[in-house]
Image (tube, rainbow, N blue to C red; front, top):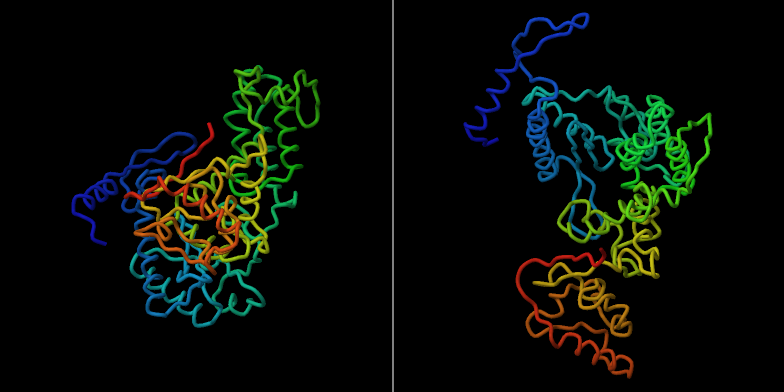
Length: 419
């Protein structure tokens, strides 16, 4: 794959110098050399796995290029998604056809012949709409429903249902069975809550909006542990949870409210959506949710229920002083190619579409960038020239706002206005 001799020598040295021993009845045996592979937990093992899987990724890219494998085409943009790899998890996506399935098996066999890594089809699953049992029997893999677990998260499930949060409850209960709250001081319990209990649901809450009952149940478990109780024995809670969850400088213990943690984690997706415009996931979300009648700060098609709609609702929900999370975003324009002229807040706290609604209605390309409108001598695409009194007044306001502004060079950035 074009790696230099020095790097190959380092990797070879690590593999050849590896030595291990086996525990027999609790006592280690003599050390022996490893003929192949590497020691478990070796920090270079994941890197090598990623390097090898890059070869499989190249195989699928080439297969899509020569039309041997038909991936999933996204609407409205020229983007093809054929596979997603994360360490030892592989997801292959494409059109439903027997030829596609046959060519996937052939690609995996070629990969096995080149690398020595064989995909265990007995542990693999096939997903599809309609009857796919015949394909699964022909391949030799399992048939699974659209609602499945991938990388520890439920995919395709309705996460507004309490039952789908059962794994988080189980994690809490399993961890608490190892601790004895009555034998710990209040300081020890606070430390365990901060370092362990509050972080356990973060993985789920970083993507899904937790139902109110789930938040209440998990916080109830934390409160009982804090005051030395358990699920079976309830002890007196001497201080209200609202006071306990305050920062230390405000008289609390510095514990976090899970609803606030959930809000912050979901809001980070809105921030990443704006600053990671070249990433694959942003392009996928944009392709699915853009081009609708609702022109918003974040592209959102509300007819498609799911994770992204909940994230957009979180960003738009009023918080303190009737301000939402998105009101703290501000675009800093340089070349103007990344910030949208009408939809993003850049020259004022609010988007121009809200300040100048009449002109926004006249705009033909509502998702145009700042560079599209202000580069050179400026170019406007109106449905008709502004001639009504309200349109002319808004045009004067816009001219005054832009009179002292000029495009620069470099990349556009986003600024967080909150503390």
